[in-house]
Image (cartoon, rainbow, N blue to C red; front, top):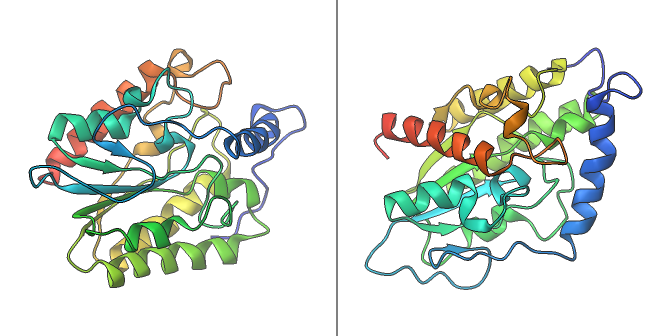
Length: 238
């Protein structure tokens, strides 16, 4: 997907302002790691699930890390993990993309495939931040999407791989949003992953679901993501 214009959009636009804000979020994340309050949620360290709980790894960015929530247990990943009795492994990083900020905080794919015991389910929610490198990095982004999903499939052949349409946060949708969605869907199909569609529009038209930064969901927004995600996972038998 080659895009005719960059996501940065018009000077002074919401999308343009977001580039600077998201950069600040990434910098802040290097000194402030979200502490997981739930006993079933972890970002690091050995996995020690109890009573044979399914281990579910989340590969995502700030929307999966829960930035903007009032506490970690309010993020959508922890809500659905608690509801299902899953053991959550969530090393997601603010500002992360398939290409963007890839070296920040260590490679998450490495951490997920090296998990011991290995995850039973891997949920991928990546792609939002790569819009900020479009169209210049289009070829690299498309290649990285395919490489990441192929590695997850090859290194975790027994895991259920669920690939979620990349999230988006404004009603304004640059061309790159749908281009990256298409690349993610195609790569997921190639590796036989389950797909969840429509996530880029789950917050559309609801500014009241956004936190004060105007970029990340608030508790209400994460609750809505959890509700929609739960319905989609039930459709997949999870």
